[in-house]
Length: 233
Ligand code: FE
Image (tube, rainbow, N blue to C red; front, side):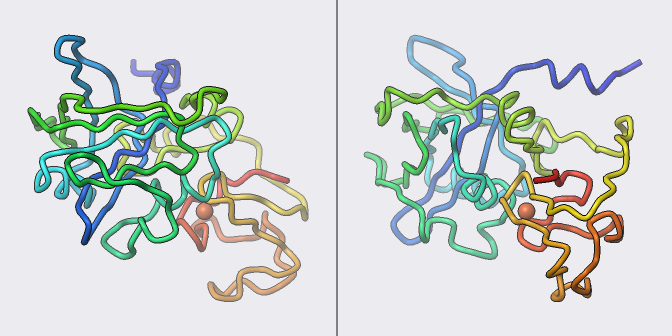
C-alpha cells in the first residue's frame, strides 16, 4: 500500500524561484530545490508546466533561487505560491534586485539567493526539472534560519498548493474532527481571516455565519485555499 503520510517525512526547504526581464518578471514558491553537483555548482528546481515561470525560465535561460527565512510573511507565500502571474504582476510591491543575467531576484524575507544559468531541462510529466549552474550567490541575512517545509506545515500550518510536486489531495487523508465554534479562522496560505461577524458577503456568506456553517466548497476569497485548511485563531 501507499501511505501518503509517509511523504510528509521527506524534508525540504521553501524558496522563491524567479525569472524574467525588466519588462516582465515572475516567480513561484518551490520546495523542490536542491544542489545536484559541486563542480560545477549546479542546482535543480522543479516547476509545474502550467506555471508562467516555467515559460519565462525557458525564454530567459536563467533563474534565481531566494532562500526564505523562518518568519516569512504568509502574504508573500500567498502571492508567490497561490496566485498566478498570468493574472497579476507579482513583482509589484515585492522587493527584488536584477541579477547579472537581467533576471529579477526576490529579496523580501530572503536570507540568501543564487542566480543560475539554465544548462538543462528534464521533462518529468506534469513538471519540468530545471538544472542551473550558479553564476553568483549572496547571503543577505546571516542571523535567521531558513524555513523548512516541515516548519511551514507544522508551525505555520501551511499547505502545498495544487500545482506543487508535493501536493497531496486532502480527501485521501484521514479526516480530522469537524471545526465547531464561532471563532475566527485564518487561512494558512495567505493570512486571510474569516470573521463570522462579517461573513463573506462577496461570496454570498451573510454576516453572522459561523465557520462551521460555511459550505464545504467555500474557498479562501483571497487565495483559493480550501475551508478545511483554515485554523482557529
Ligand atoms: Fe488564503
